Structure formats: structure tokens, C-alpha cells
Image (cartoon, rainbow, N blue to C red; front, side):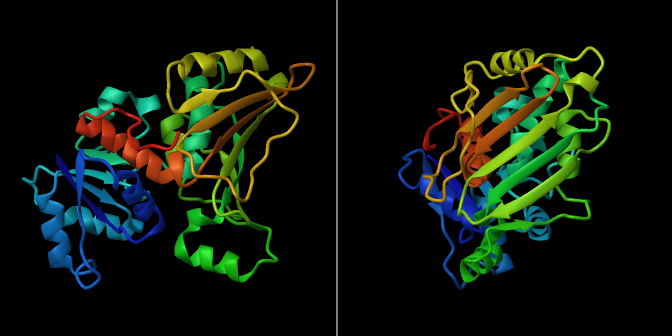
Length: 307
């Protein structure tokens, strides 16, 4: 039985990780009471006495938590913040992209961001395969349920029921851009247009492509087939063969750790829309952390996940 400490267990991501581990006999959770969970000494003791630590903290607090770990400690860390996602000393925790065996043997794993999870699943395999140019000026449009913004945004949305759509990052410079560029192997970061909608959870990430403007442009069918081949055998990522006339995000959607990918094309094949649907708290956060933990602990990859 492996011991796990969730540093930041009372936040949205931490709570959902704990739920996924609650009935798992392979793991025992080390919990700190309210009086001790913000005590640096108590946290340091917990971080250094478990097999696995999962950091569900703001970026600076996550960096601080890492400094509390003794250099000789055997603890293995999964960081759900964005603090280490472009750090070459950390393994990027997207097993479908970096390799399951790479995550399984890693000592420091950085959990992917929710928006980058959708973007990278759509773009990284196609750039690697040479179907999309790495120097293309990619754009990505995305909407997320408000739970991805933490307690503050949750309170704001629930206090303002008349707000249906909240666009942000209007002046660029979003913290996810470096992560998207690095792990997709791009020459430049994409233009990113994120927004939050009046739904607790759920996310749609879209990458529109003007294929007719690309040299040696692939067809939408070629893009779909390449993604299907790349994710073949994955229990969590599904590339849909069909291209329905519309896609929906529902306010009451149940939590899921799956990632659904779609490729839509215009009739003349000159345009494509790549779309990822996922749960920002599932494959976009807590589910991804548990998937990495399973691999690192030698468990079934999908154990405890919501499929």
C-alpha cells in the first residue's frame, strides 16, 4: 500500500483527487487537520514521509512545497499547478504524448493544464507527424466551466447568475502559452482566446485551420485518421469518426476523465476545425493526476477514473 499526501486537499482539484482515491485499497491518504494544513513544519513532515505527494496549490506555493522536500527524500511528486510545466527537470504528465513508461518511472511529474490538454491532443500529434507545419500561426478558442478558476471564480459566477460568458486574457500573455508551444513543438505560441461560461464543469477547445493556405495541405480526413492512429488503444482518448452538426456542453454534465476529439471539414476540404471536449476537472486536472499516480505506482492506468 502506497501513502499519498495531497497538499492543498481542500481545493477543487484536491477534493476531486481524494474522491477518486477514497475507495482504492492500493493507497492510503495522509490527511492534515485544519489547524495543521497551513503549518509549514506539518506540511514538510507530511511531504517527506509519504510515497507520493500531489500538489494542488497556486504556483508560488507549489514551488515552496518542493523546497520543503529533503534532497534525499524518496517521495515522488505530482504538481497540479502550472509551476513546472515547462521545466526540463520535470516530466510532463500527459502519458499519451510523452509515453506511459516515461511517466511511470518519473520522480517529478507536472500535471498538464486543462486548456493545453485539449490543444496538445489535437495539435501535437499532427505536428510530429508532419501534417501540420510547426511554424504555422495557430489559434485556439476555448471555453471552460467556472470550476476551473478555483473558489474565487466559483463564488463570482454563483453570485452573478446573469453572467453567461466571461472572456479573459484579452491582452495576451496567458500562462498556458509556453506550455502549449513547448509540448506541441511549435515555432511560436498560438493566439489563445479563453473564456469561462455559466456551467460548473466541462470544456471545449477548438483549433480552426485554413488548410487551403498551407503548403502541401492535408485533408480533414487525413487529420482525423492521423489522430485516430496516434491515440489507438487509449482507454481515455477517443477520436470520433462521425462529425455531427453541433456539439454541446451541458450545465449538468457528470464528471468524466475522458477526452473526446473531433475533426470537422468544409465541403471543399479547404478548412478544418479540430475540437476537443473534456472535463476541466477530469482529464484537465484531477483525473490526469490520478492517471499519472496510477502509472507511477504500478497500478492499472484507469483505476479509479470516471470512464
